[in-house]
Image (cartoon, rainbow, N blue to C red; front, side):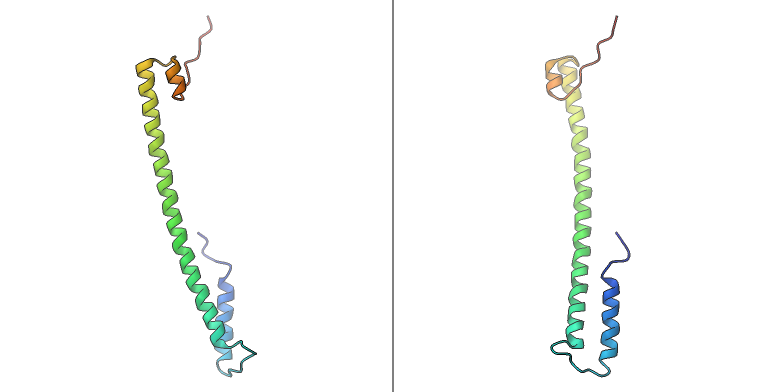
Length: 106
């Protein structure tokens, strides 16, 4: 995960503007330090939520990879069992995804 996020400089600038503007708080239309502060707080909350979702996604991706690895091992064992029962050169083994042994040239 990146340590520097593209919205961090904007949050830092917002804090600077709020700090300076609160000293002599003259609204500019409907824009006030409180409005900027609320927007910055909303952005921080959204950032936290995104980080939590990324962590959850990473966890699910790990689970998916582990499940895939386990299933692949089960399939290999099952295919080996089919090969042991019917033979590696059988139609059943091929249907199970096995590759028949190569024919040797004489």
